[in-house]
Length: 518
Image 1 (cartoon, rainbow, N blue to C red):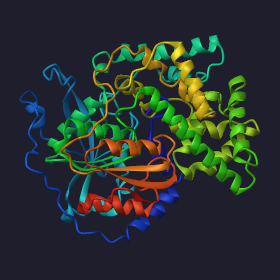
Image 2 (cartoon, helix red, strand yellow; image 1 turned 120 degrees about the horizontal axis):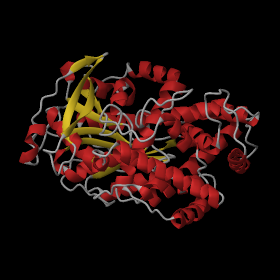
Image 3 (cartoon, rainbow, N blue to C red; image 1 turned 90 degrees about the vertical axis):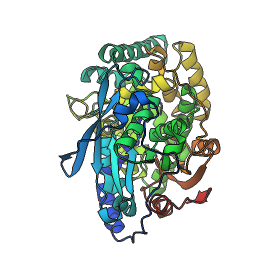
Image 4 (tube, one colour; image 1 turned 180 degrees about the vertical axis):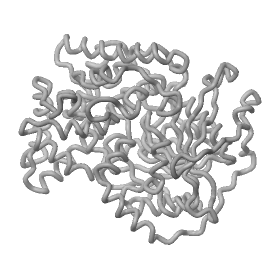
């Protein structure tokens, strides 16, 4: 994901916090679904738990010391800070396991990642009953981990809470030279803060590093192959794993794809198109519902949103609490984005925009807080808005030149007049990043892997449908499942067609038909 848009964790959080009743109903309905017979996953010849390099044997041979953490089990996985110098020190990766609901039908472990980069797999796995189908929940231990630099795994910390508020509230669409210099200064502040506070780890939080950690985790779990569910950025993590360890790919599902060969600019332009399309779908729904505060047509509604954001640039709205920042253009845009991840939040967004029209920005600021893992009144419950830069800037560097982003804005605005100007400037901090990655974007085929199921949603805002088709075409053994729908990602989001296909793949090894349309 770009440095602007990070999370299916937010989509999931929106589904949990803003539509809890819907999830509760879905869970009750799922409990009545018959379970297909479980078929154990067997590794082909050559797929073992041995270390790929003898020098890493101590990490691959470790035994996890599981302890109770509420209704789950938790452990720390030791991994080297630098895989090129495994004797140079290590860190602890936090792991959480939700045991298979039916031990008698247990197949193995299913490692899950919600995206980001910066999403907590530990928190994601706590929602095991919601993130996989009931048959999968019965047959697999659902295992989540906080990737290095995230959450409880040597977390990256770049700015204090107040400074992070200021950074996230900075004008994201600079109109003049002074505003452009302010944005550059904010970007430098983020980059220098990350360097000052995380000197030892900062160069080693790339997606490739995290993928290598996943293979150590696979071994520690006792699995010959890795069974995996990756959403959003988690698809990039999974694809990177498949590139490094194709023979260790078990049953892989990549839902809401970020292709591995995209540059920073290509990701940003794709997301601009995706959010523009999703916002138009939201406005169309608002108009169809009647009484839409945005106008009487899609074009009127989109024009109103642009005018509204421009007005906040000139005059922010009060957010209803002296402890909260004012609702600036930047915060309002985060609030809009949060609702695009899950169409169940569209009505909440409409109410928030209606409230904002009357001069009160409290509800829209609340959506922005949800997006940013920000606690109302100040503070952050996670570090996703910092670690997203630490990872992305290693994986997909960008330019320090102002003219580059001016060019992005001109290009992106032609295809996405509402979201293009915002996303054009999203990776400025990567132009000043103090450390450089050594694994540039490249196509991945994962020759020799088991079938990899790629899932795409036609009006996904953050990972556009075209990207799923792009990855399926790259993979030597990829199959594509498509959902004609709204919101971010598809599995366990309301499509019985998608859920049945993915559940059957995990539990019975039944590979979906390539090109399945849902």
